[in-house]
Length: 238
Image 1: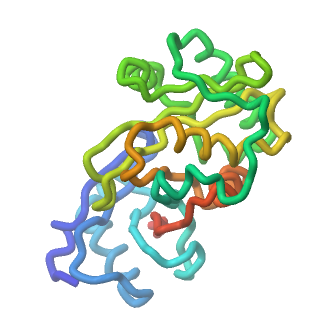
Image 2: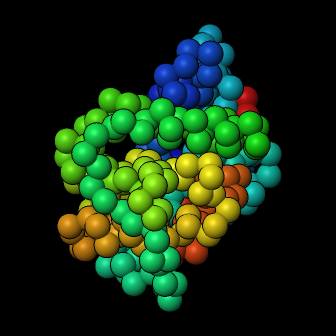
């Protein structure tokens, strides 16, 4: 690992909130080890201590919990679109349909679904937030925002962003995946990934998205659909 650790670090703010500062440690010459953590913490404090960062964020392909004294953050779950199209042996319920969205008139309904999840599971508030209206509007224009319907009733949103590369892979990045409250608990979550894979035009890309390590419901749905954990961030408290 380079001696000039400050060059590997930058200040960030969760969701742009100035009350939630952290240090992002990125370019390193090798995977870090447990022995590196105190060194990284000291370098972060020396460089950005006046800004009172709460933690250092580090990338690791190791599973959550591997490094004692750290806390989990978001994980990247991915799989080639072509593989996901098959649904991994699960038949999509006939009543569950994905169609190209024409408007954003259900944005408030989607926001209410997030509010309900936050109320039922308070930690969810810090784990996931609805995509900004403006971002979904861009996906609407790009043709990558989809309405979920169940027997004709609006049931949620699914959207992706198209990027050249993410983590060195040609990717579709999951932007939004939410079911309205009354349609949760029916096992639909995993099928949304299958329908999304079937709806995007380029089977040669990788479908990848971040899910907080402790967001068990979202992780389980993604894994049932066939996405696998390829690594993610951890937090080193300061």
